[in-house]
Length: 183
Image 1 (cartoon, one colour):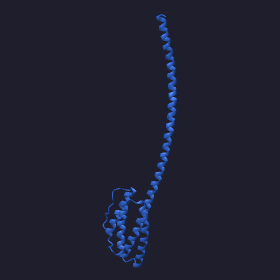
Image 2 (image 1 turned 90 degrees about the vertical axis):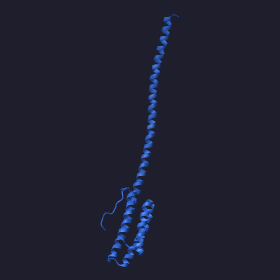
Image 3 (image 1 turned 60 degrees about the vertical axis):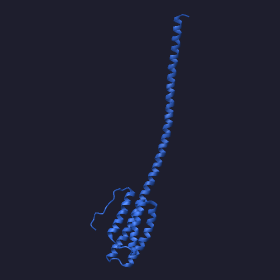
Image 4 (image 1 turned 120 degrees about the horizontal axis):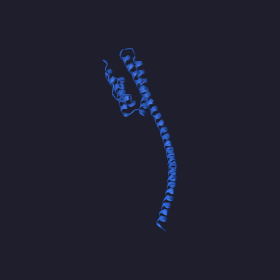
């Protein structure tokens, strides 16, 4: 075997391996793309399922939050309505427009409604709002029982404190309101 034959043999071997290598490279590249596409589709489907499940959970959470928020507002409004009716009765009684027997009826109604409202508040309100409510209601009961004088400034301060706690709880505003009137 001479050098020409060796050179031809090596060249043929390299050429055949080169063509086979190119074919193998092309096939492996194509097969890699097919596998990558399948893996990507599978991962995409899994992520889409997880995203949909997360969206459903978020919708459920949002619905619960909104229902709870609306319930809080309804209960807080009920408390404010109950207290304002009693305060109107105090004012009417002090000015002589309300008889003792009618004032007693107003207090009995207040007493019944405040107990209902307390139960509703206890289910929804945070402790700070409950404490402010308790201070206000306790003071109103003491006024009704004659244990404390009816001083509008004191009642107003207790009511504003309660309203500020409500504002914090329902997320209206964290800054407290203050009374800037003259009475």
